[in-house]
Amino acid sequence: MRDIAQISVFSNPVEMAATALEKDFPIIEVSQVAEQESWRKEINRPIYHIHKWWATRLGSVFRAITLSALSRPFADTWKGFYKKHDIAGKLVLDPFMGSGTTIGEALKLGAKAVGCDINPVSSFMVRQAFTRVSEAKLYAAFECLEREVAPKIRQYYQTRDPQSGEHIPVLYFFWVKTATTPDGESVPLLSRYVFAQDAYPKKKPRAQIVCPNCWGLIEDRYDATEVMCLHCANSFNPQKGLVVGQYVTTKQGKRYRIKDILSADGKPPEHRLYAMLAVGHDGEKVYLPPREDDFALVAEAEAMLKKEDLPLPTLAVRSGHNTDQARGYNYMYWSDFFNYRHMFSLISLPVCLPSAVVY
Image 1: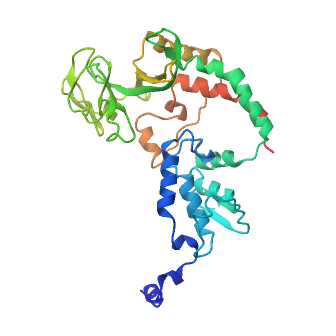
Image 2: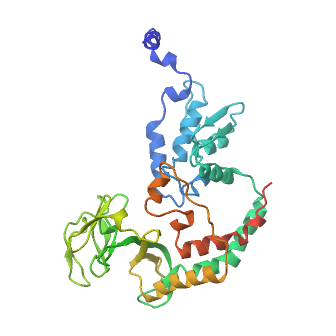
Image 3: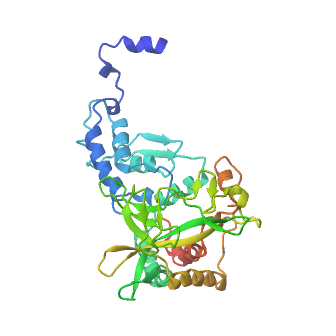
């Protein structure tokens, strides 16, 4: 209450402002820029978005926040948003740095920055993102990857165009975890059968749906509650899968707790490939169901991984508040989160990386 009493003696709250952050922050202008940055993730993201992270913050927002926090009251943050700055003598501390957005924006403004995080993955990612490297050697590493590694990996990320029969690149593979009931039924752990929809579905309602009977792909509205499969004439509600929370109900109506029907050998749930997003020769994206050739590529990648005797990671997932959730489903090693094709591709990459020598 004493602090409140002290604050109340100011006749004008603006007098309390210590930085520009407390006065006339350009909310509307920054929001418009942030919307563009968040929309085209593959184009408008700075370097600390190169790795996946939980709730990664937008660089434009934190540039504005950091610039305002390091400027005097009444400074025009928006006027200086696109200008080059050299805010020497200022130190920014982020004790929960995550993907490093605050650290990166502070450094770009010329300030010094110190970041830390309880998660060692965060520390590793941010350190790699901001470590200075030789630009010439970095480009040489990219060229090496394109020449030596890309052909080796790309052959496992392609499918045949159903029209021409020629190979086209695949952008995404869609997988679903499965569990086997005591009756021997393999159940896909899907909570709904809509697997791809627009980020703003009310504006663009067309979505991709997988049929639970024949695994054919259907295009319909994202909120459709009754569709008929064009391939097998099966009628179903795409909003209601077999999974609700921790439980799965079979087609025969039997209900099981998912953890209770996990594999007895301690392995994580099996995975089933059920759809792909490819790019046709005309540049248009197309959703396709997997065929024999696609399953053969997955098997071939598994065989190559074993044949080349590549060093696979063996690091165990340690017990913790969040990791125990994964361990409860038998994900005991970090390698369990990847399939054989993932591991073959990732382990093939380091062949060119030593040439990117740090300053």
